[in-house]
Length: 72
Image 1 (cartoon, helix red, strand yellow):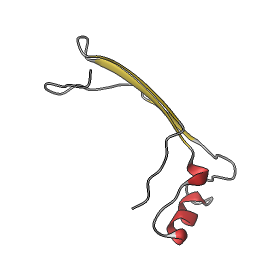
Image 2: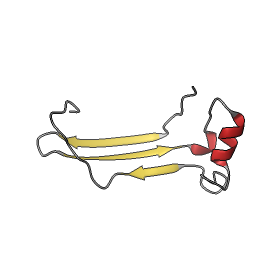
Image 3: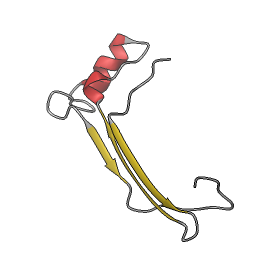
């Protein structure tokens, strides 16, 4: 299986307040899979439209802490 590199990521977690935020940017234009055909389909206008949107950016709006966590 191929690895995808994350171009940029930040995270801010407060274990005591049970709050957190994550911000991730992924360069989907350089996406690789074990199948060139599948990678081409993912990059196409059917899905990610990488010619127009070469990066995918995600910022969380909410986080849920369930049980004990050792994230911090």
